[in-house]
Every structure is written in C-alpha cells, then in structure tokens.
Image (tube, rainbow, N blue to C red; front, side, top):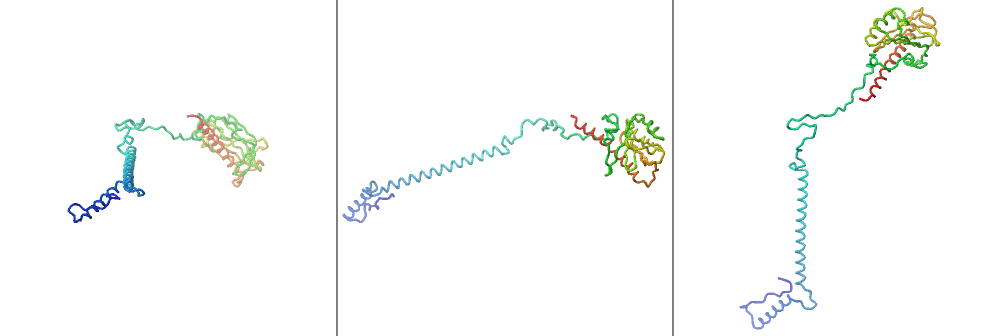
Length: 303
C-alpha cells in the first residue's frame, strides 16, 4: 500500500446507512484520487516513493555487479598464479631437451666442467737441482753482491772475489780431487772480514744434485784456499783454521775461517765459528733466492 491512499471502504453487505454509505464512498473516491494526484502545495509522495525504490534497486544492482566483477578479478588472479607457479603448469614442466653437458634420463654424457684450479707454483729447488733447469746467469759478483752484508745484526765487509772453472786449483788437501771426481764445473769465492777475523766462502757448481751431495759427503781433510786482497791480508795459509762443507741442490758450499794475525783457531774462538757459520748461511740463502727467482719467472709464463 502506497502512501496517500485512504483506508479501505466497507464493502457490500456491511451495516451501513444511506449517509454512511455515501460518505464512505466519497471518502474512498477521495483516497483514490489523492493517490493519483496531490493537491496543490502537497508533496508527491507516490513519485518520491517510486524514485526511492528505483534508486534502491539501482544501488543493489551496482553492488551485485561490483561483487561479481571482484569475484571474476580474484578468480583471474588465482588462475594466473596457478599457471605461473602450479606444478602442472607448462613453466614448471621439465624441458624436453636437456642442456648440453648434462646427463639425460636415458643415460647421456655426464656433466663436464672446465678446470678452474690453477696449477701449483713451481718448486724453487727444482731450478737449482739440475743444470737442465738452472739457466739464469751466475757469477761471483751476482752470488756475492755488494760491498758488505749484514748477518744476524753483524756487518761483514766484502774483500776480494773470484771465479774459476779449474775447481781443484783453488783448494788444498783432498778437496780438489773430490771436486774433480764429481764433475765440478765452476768454483766461485768471496772473502769477508771483521775485527781481525776473515772467512772465505766458496760455492762449487755441478750438473746434478747427486754430484754436489757426493762432493760434500766425500770431503774429509781438504779445504779451500783462502782468498786475500781488497783490504784483507792473507790468512789460513800456514795456521789452523776452521772449515765447513755443505750442499743444496746442485751446489756445494765451503768455508774456511781464521785470524788475519796468523793465530791458530781453537774451539774456544766463538767469534771465528760464528763468522764461518754466518757466511755459510749467507751462501745457502743466495742459492735459495736463485731458485725462487727462476720459479717466479716460470710462473709468470703463459700456459
């Protein structure tokens, strides 16, 4: 029932008099007329109600459509996610063709990878153990460089130096015979002195490590001839002096140390022993450096 309609008229058979029937009929006509058109100055309640109902229907329709579109959008997003990440999607399926270098399920080639680990650096001793690899130039000046050397905090001044291929000619006792028998190709010497003590260090060169080792082991009663000059007077020519013998690689190295005053060396002459040991250690280090320099140069060569 819309706004503006009158109450229900009493139907036929109702207890009504002539006045009441006429009055009620007029009242019903008036209510019906009022529902069709309002009197001047009165709001059109029916039109407003119809407009409100229409607006409500439109809003409900928009809400329904919006919900439907949102559902469709969510469904599409879920479908895209399933296609992108789902286990049954084409993107997740295994490739029909295995990458090159990998084993296939049918037993193809095993994986192969290029070697990336660099080769180990050359061993420095290899370069000073055989004439076949020890190719760097060598001389008494390169082996004993500079006018002095500091060893263990002590400064030793260098005197004369010398080099010869006639190894036995600069020895005494049985050392010359030992050097010759084992194939000595060169003997280089240098003399160092400090505070009335002098030492001549000699490095004998052989073709192989085995020859140098035998020369060191076979030396018994011989030693080097001391090398005087360049500020160092003669020593150890007629007196007792201290000698050493050792080897490394294809090099055998020897020392003879004593007093420049001509005094014999005794076991209590610790400065003489220390001087001889220092210069023997210096010769050993120089041979090591020679091997290291050649190994470093070889490592820089392209593969």
